[in-house]
Every structure is written in structure tokens, then in C-alpha cells.
Image (cartoon, rainbow, N blue to C red; front, side, top):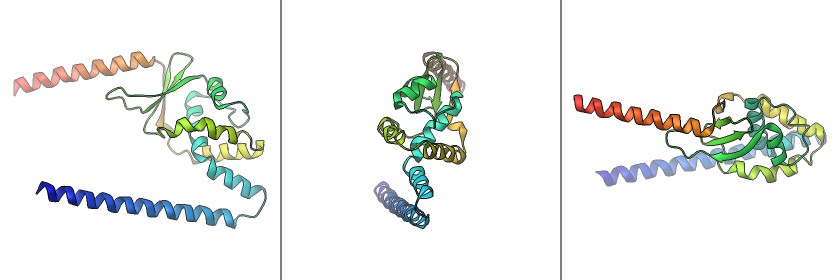
Length: 190
């Protein structure tokens, strides 16, 4: 019975993977059709840049919004310099048990910005992508950042916290320990 259930789950996953591949293919076809329909010139360049730099622009604009930084489109330094300008000391992956964050931006003021379910290793590639992004004309960069700001529909993915990351992790550990004690007491009462 267990073996049959495992086989059924495997079939379902294979079907889901096929559907995902099909959807990605359709999106690529749609993207290509839209770009081909645009007139040659500035509009097409902007559309290509929006498509190419969408993930970078989305990440940077949401992080900047959480921090309260404005001026991304005008910044022409390196990615590391941009993060420093925004007040970000480092980007780290949060591996603390029961933390709702996957990525943490540690800030110079001692706080941090936690990010729920976002981009994982792709963030590590943004330094390279930023190099080509800053080589674009200013007007195109501004259009890409504006488009990312308009498309960002869920600001809650980034949460600014004023406590240090260590204090936050200690709070999580204490809450987990207290919950564990309560569970043990409930079990004893049963």
C-alpha cells in the first residue's frame, strides 16, 4: 500500500513538473511576442531591460523600500557600494530554526531586514547583474526601477527589525524552549 502511494505521489510530481515546464515555455513565448511587437527604439530597449533586470530590480527596490532608501536608479557604483550606501553591512542566509526569514540584510545601525521566502542563491548573482545594469542609460535604469516599484505588490516579504540578529535569534530560542516546557506539562497532565 505504501509503495503504491509513493508511486502515485511520484506520478503526480512528474505531472506537476511537466506543467511547470509548459508554463515557463509559454511565458517565454509570450515575452518574445511582446518584445517583437514593440516598435524598434527606446520602447523596445526599455522592455528588454525590464525583462532582463526584473529580479534584480524587484529585490533592490523592495529592500530599499524596507530600509527607506531612495536613489537606486541614480546610483552608478558597484553592487557592494550600493548596499553600503543603503546601510547594508552584509547579506546572509538565516539558518536559525523556526525563523520565518530566509535571507537577512544586516544593517549598519545594528538592526536587520528579514526576507521571507525570496530568491536564495540568485541574490549572490546580483553583483554580476548589477554591473551590466549600471552600464545602461540613466533613463532606461529609471524606467526599470519604476517598473519594479509598480509591480511590487507585496511589501511584506521584507521586514525591518530594530533588534540585532543575535537578540532576535535568542528570542526565538527562548520562545521555542518555553513552548517545549508547556508541551511537556500538557503531556504530563494527560
